[in-house]
Image (cartoon, rainbow, N blue to C red; front, side, top):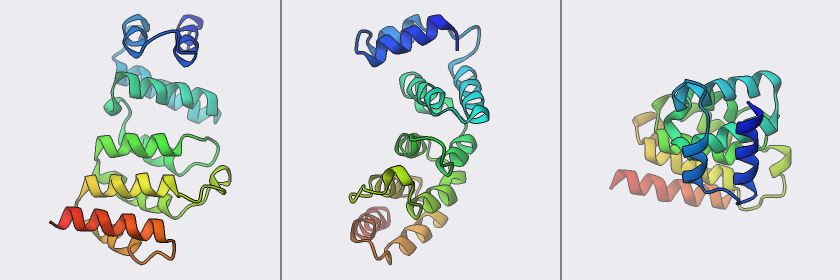
Length: 167
C-alpha cells in the first residue's frame, strides 16, 4: 500500500478521519474498490501479515463488504496467523455466499489461541448468524448439528437461528 494510503488509514484509526473522508480521499490506483481490496488481501495472505490484513478488512468495511471474493474470505476464516476472524465472519454474513457454509461451520468449532479466553464464543455466534442468513439446505443442516453442541451459547444461538429460518 502506498505511504499516502497508509497515512489515511492511520488517521482513520486515530479517529482523525471519518469513513466518508477515507473513502473520498483513498487512492485506488486506478482499480475498482473490489480489485484494490482483493489485491491487498492477497498480498497480506501471501506475507501472512496480520497488520496488512487488518488494513484490507478495514477497507472492505469502508467500501462495502462485497469487495472481497467469498472464496478468499472462506480460506482466511480458517487461517490462524491473523486476528480478524470475527470481522471476516461479519463480512461473510453480509455476502451470504453458499460457498461459505462449510468454512463458517468449521470456524464455529475451531478454538484459536487468541480467543481461548472468550467464554462468549463471539466468533462462533457470528458464524452461526451468518449461517442463518445464508439459509440454504446445507446451512440449515449445519445449524441443526450445532444445536447438539455441548457449549450452551453455541447451542442456543444455533437453535435461535434454526427457529428463525424455519418460520
